[in-house]
Length: 173
Image 1 (spheres, rainbow, N blue to C red):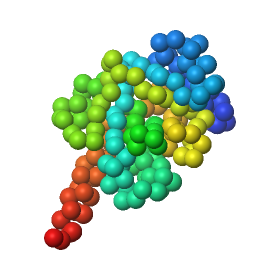
Image 2 (image 1 turned 90 degrees about the horizontal axis):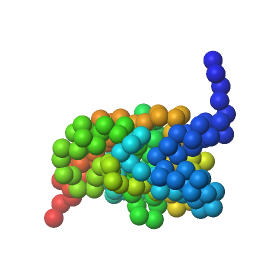
Image 3 (image 1 turned 180 degrees about the horizontal axis):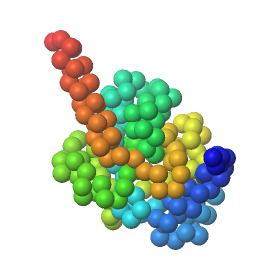
């Protein structure tokens, strides 16, 4: 059995993510200086953007630690980036999800697929705590190319919508 340290995993993930950079040297410099860089979607990964409101509805709380634990479990370790300022979550999924995901076929409020011609501000893989930076990995990548399932993200959206409907119907006039 191979055992890799967190630092080794982060290094491997960093190299893989940088393959989505237009300028790898610039991206490395941005990570070193600001902790975040812009990477192109639609090549090695696509992103499904979810509003924090939607994610909080699915989880039933606004507590960042509880949300992070829920996302790790519910999305079966599929990587997620959170931007605490814009109140958005980004699930990284295979590039093919931009055209094949059930989410791609629907216009859903609080959900958007970012594919080709889109860029994502990606924090360095070492930022995994909600209080370290504006943008962090609530669910870090397990390894290079280890992306999430668009179907699991769709289930999360369905769960959030169900909980919203249930909550709305229990609130009286």
